[in-house]
Length: 273
Image (cartoon, rainbow, N blue to C red):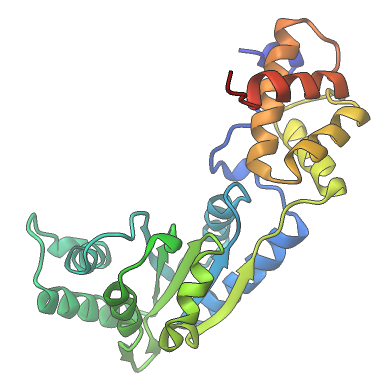
């Protein structure tokens, strides 16, 4: 809607996992390096945590692009609260889709299929990754124990699977209560919010990637964006997107601190009457 007005090719602040808009902050790059180390060296597992809106999903998508082709299959579990039997069936079907059935497998059949898939995959020189998203939602002890037991499947090439847990920091106490799993995680990564300089760089980076040739947010606006969002990428995206929309509607030439504060007050903040 507002792209042509601001001279943009695309909307720069969409809250999605478009790798083209990945911003390589210090905290994200450090996490990327650790996760790649764990996966490419075929370690048992790793964990990535961070508050909502810190860019965990985008980081994982970007990391997948950088992994060698031998790291396959890559299973993404987005609903980890499945009953244990359904969870195992899902993993069995994802790891060996040619044997997928319309009915849930028994626990024994699912485990056998997973073991067979990992063995064949490993013997072919490949390594599987299972990413467990929203890991903080897992409350079933049996499910965590079952995931841990999957790490016991080995071939002559070593273990055939890396488990990558991605979730909010609330998952860390859960891990502490499961030392058998926790001790098998090679790395733990905690994303932090962007600082002021990174927030400024993040906003300008996204604008440049979207085709901006001239500054749109002035210095006061950028400072206000950090003050309101405290470096949370999702909140930055929402605030900046709305500011561009209002700026277009009001035919502003640039966006200043006053405009950012007005957008935050009128469109982001909600006050009960």
